[in-house]
Picture 1 (tube, rainbow, N blue to C red):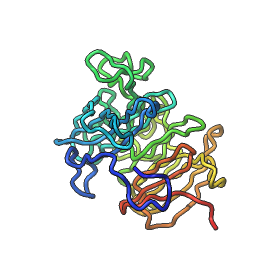
Picture 2: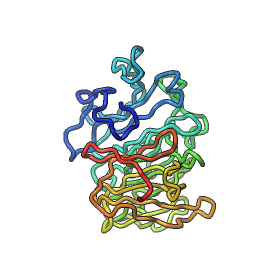
Picture 3: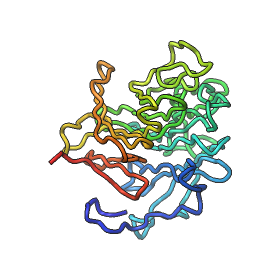
Picture 4: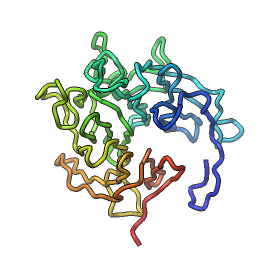
Length: 321
């Protein structure tokens, strides 16, 4: 935790969770994967964290800040609200965020290995390969959360009612446009294609029948219910998409309404201009050519965007001088 100023030399520790999670090294995809502050954080001091436990368990937990210092978490306040066994160490997904409806959205992967061997993406009975939507302010019987009654698979026998959308390979960051409420998701590809999706309730985004706009291995040539990505790029350009945010700040007017995203492997950064009414991409601007591996994006209360790299750096955007 530190003031939002560029001259800060050293942050204060908010919480140390290193010994409680399964992070091994930079080759693995486990560890602390996401944090989301409750919409009423200023009054209730609650935040939520997505991390992994041994052996390959995804955990969503509720925490509170210290009663003595709101800039420090209280580790003892942890309440695990959701535990999801994973078959492998990879494709855990990695975003939790609150929507305009006040519900918590959780971006999960297909469970890992490669090619989705358990067919989780197209299986409505598992939460793997899905984006979840849960109510953390209420509790259903036997659960630490409630399932919103209008979730798309509520009432279907055997279905994972927490699911909001399906056909997901490996969400690596998703976010809501603070102006329109649109949910943007970046899905890391398998063999050839990285993709960006606009997520809607009950949507099926194709994995593992399709990768991007293309038939995947023995997948179906055409299923009308599958929702196509709004954008894709080939692995000759980049091999691991990092989803970002729609820019709604004031410092860089040229980026207004653009979806900022990057590629972790190639180090490229882009700004995607999308017309939601016409449902088409207007432009895709290259902001940085290479060597800037973005791990995650964020935004402040004013809508200014930030991103981080593996090198302990935090960047923001500014007009060219």
